[in-house]
Image (cartoon, rainbow, N blue to C red; front, side, top):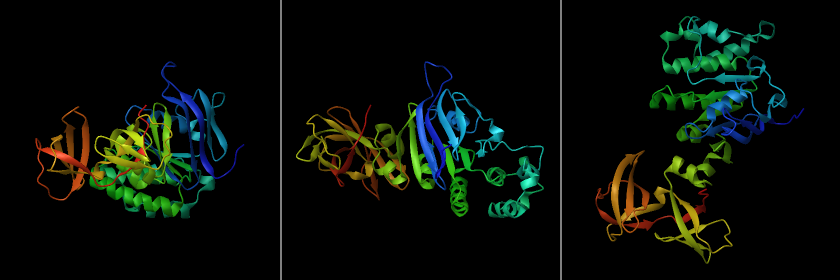
Length: 347
């Protein structure tokens, strides 16, 4: 038995519905005690399959899943879901409609080890005590989310799994609930694994983010590094609308059609490489005419422009704050306002 500060250990697991097309392919990740970790990825990449494998609803073909050092799953062993020390919050909350809130929260608690003070603390923390007599169809989306969380936490799980728990809430409510839960998890020292396709959610909540692509984690890093220094074009495009530019190394700089950039990685080859440049590192001006604005969108306080290189039709994203006089159809130039970039994998 392995015992250290790793609450969840997943080692090279494989799962497939069709053996020729694995959903999870030698997938590995660790979650330390008290961490909030998110597995992020597009729809259909296997996030929910991973969720079901950890809580025991799917049997893995190879590898190991351990919780608090104890084996949960392998090719030769499978502990059923009800015996795993894992709290689970499903996308639809999976609450019992024929029970009131109180019975939902207390359902399945072991009366021999019942800790009423702890249960009361969770109930008060999540502000659900005044909902005890209500039935599930009498609750709002945010109230159902808090009840579902309370039901999971009162069991003192070693690990809390959440699968797209905010997807049924409107944006303002999602933001409010996220802030509340971040405080609650921090106060309790909870160990959490969140499964989501929402990068904003992942960046705002997580200590670490693992990006799932083609059955594997292709980057496992802090939110800052995932956003500012993505290692793969899929991450760069999906999280920050980044530009993937091709350039030639020369005297410590990368020469692109836009201009020169600097990267921290050492490049020994003279072959062309691909770099990541975020939209807010570039700006437009009226002095050039090599580019044409083909789309514009007001996005999160900034104006996002898609401009086309008139020579090769390559599209570049540029984000600018404040009022400006650029419009779709304008011929423009592109200026570099921050020349720091990072090497990117385009495979």
